Amino acid sequence: MIGLFKHPKRRLKKLIKDGEYGEAVAFGKSIESEYSDDSDFMFIMGSIFFIVDDAQKALPYFEKAFQLNNNDVETLTLKTNIHLVLQQKDKAIDCCRRIVTLQPKNSEAQKLLEELENT
Image (tube, rainbow, N blue to C red; front, side):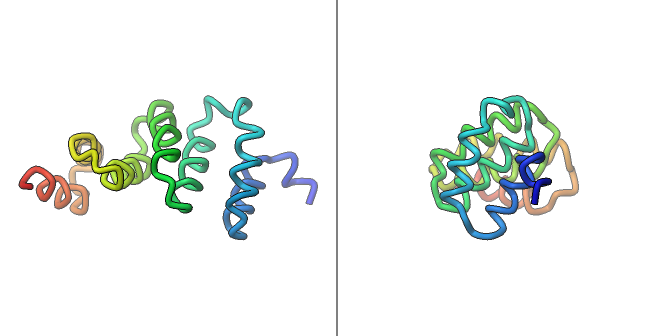
């Protein structure tokens, strides 16, 4: 049990796994200043808000995670989904283009990009 307190990100992941989203948000916020330059932490926080359908709050975390690690296709994929939920088509297109640049064989991003560009 002590390990969870020595490793706050593990504790955060456990809270999410256990479905304790409110507690995860509160705990995450309490340690956020210590992890403001940790892309993994930002991704986890964005994911919590994404899970609870709060795209508006999730977006800044995914943007910060991407800023810290701009080769992370998983972050870009979730960021694309957030932009779609928020009806920000141009930003979703930009994310898809970045994914295809990083992973040219990513057929899902390629297909979505074509759909978005043709609507």
